[in-house]
Length: 116
Image: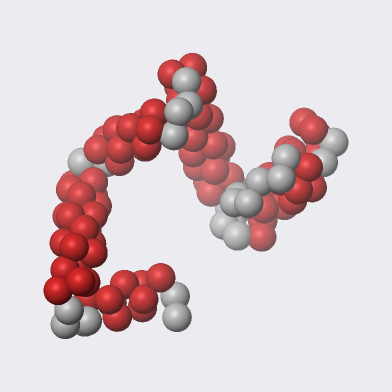
């Protein structure tokens, strides 16, 4: 089962023990709908999450800026006809190799990162 199917299954459990989780799911869903209307809310949530994880304000600002720069880059790629997926991955690997001497996956392994 994927995440969506598991969450749907949990919603169908008729148990008082499942109620707190169901309420949490409803709250999160409501927040995401609000973020659809006002995308700045998702940026604010990300900043708040980074703070809770203990990142410095400088790191958070750099991370937000890097997201903005990446978005600008992928917008340009899209204008030039680059397709998402493998073509984006190939260009990202090329940039990573030029910058660090390692492909994205090699760098991730080198830093022992679990997520992309």
